[in-house]
Image (cartoon, rainbow, N blue to C red; front, side, top):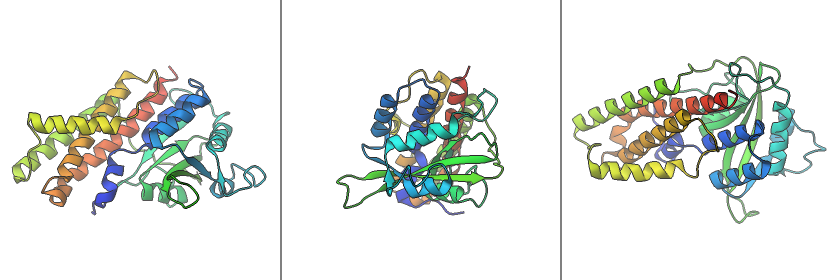
Length: 284
């Protein structure tokens, strides 16, 4: 089993799609205004967002008359999100209107197998999932950072996919169970790393560095009123992510990959659990 390339490891640890999914969920449920959502997207992922118009047309959620240019705006993206989710029944027990899907080495995304959406998420590592009135239809928004001569700054290009077919969802954990998995993965990896003699992951100096990294992962914040349990689980995931990044930056580097891979799985599971739990709690 291969480990992600070093340049992709940070994306495996923390994806801005996590926070964007939460803010989008808050907006879909009309808890926050559109202006606040726009500000949140720009704060999380950068000031310039575009919608890949061709992908939205190909997915069947927009017409060529609506998007008669190569790239739509963030407003176009939100309008289409509202269109596909507006009439979807909501309840604590049904699938949330907005969700987070993550993928990594050895972990296929929870999307119809072989679909273009699954392939895109597998390549990028993250996507935002939208429910549809048809339970066998899943919409997926995949963000990609693009550089072009047309724009002075990098743009987040959102590609829209619509996948048909049943989805085998990963086992859903409670926030407590996901947190326990994170703790166990961290303790096991830490013990093995120390036994290998490569690096110590204990001690006040290391903890201070890890704390600084964890703070950077958690920026720029979560939507108002998010469940305390979900917020704590995300904070734990940030902390464990920072430990992984510090270990990867050590002299041992790649030699620690086999020990860190299980931690990445636990981090992804924790983040998806936290987003799912937060959106369900919003309905209580």
